[in-house]
Image (cartoon, rainbow, N blue to C red; front, side):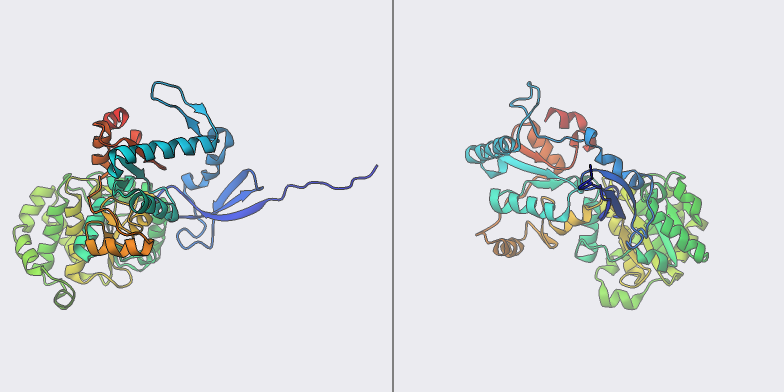
Length: 426
């Protein structure tokens, strides 16, 4: 007896990206071609340099076959139980439901609700399917719930939804302002970079603006525990001090901005005494914050849902960005307004135009010229002009029966929408 061959399982490593928060850490996945065996940080990746948080370190556990849906399930009405079916049957059923609704009720009777968890290519494909093939602008993302305020703020203040910063700016900044974000908890790997930068350069100033005292505050040189909802007043008050102390950049303002005179007149109504009373801080804290911002060679702001998820979210974003425009702290190393996303590809969705009011490449769905450009590129006669439904509007229309068919991808609105009862009824 002799052995002729022996099948030896070989372990391979594939580089990928963590799919949890917006940092986008590089991971190395260890596998045998069928099973994921482990995961580690990619030391060559420019976002995390090999570090992973607890979520990223346990990423391989999501690949457990027993915990995943391996087959499509289908039910013909809500009153029936789902049963396992094959892919051809499931896809044909979905296509027929959409086609029947479009034929009878028109293209705006269907909608797509997608997610910042999608890859950029998937985002783009959904967008093209909805607008070019079906002919509807009813495509929106769960990014509407978190990032649309930043989108509006960037577009209004800078002309495009494009954060003018990179992670490297954290190491290069002289004054970092974190607003409405518990970065230590929500973006821990990025916060580690900030910690290391401050340990190497102790003179770096860190300002944290948050009504709560969070883990992030432990690193702060100045914590402004403002009253909830007073962010705009605080930013106007900081700008008031910057102007009165001649800490603005008149040359930059004259060369690269417009509307300064109106803004200057507005912030005159926010003197230090009034702002301190409104925000629940001291005038000394306000002056300290403004002087650090105005005197720093490089001023970087970082913010997240504390600003964005608000009825005045876009105003808060613009008021913060105004500090950068007034001081010329933008477009150079270590400086700029930097919105931190909550999902791994919220920015990719905005690049591909996957909100109801956007088109690919930072174009607007309401702009006829932009629609014509995209239509020509996609090889279709035209794109729909009728405004699409935003996320909340979409589920309102689903509940009242206007939307007959909805494709949800990579998100769970029954868990994440603000009105979960409405989502469940839909």
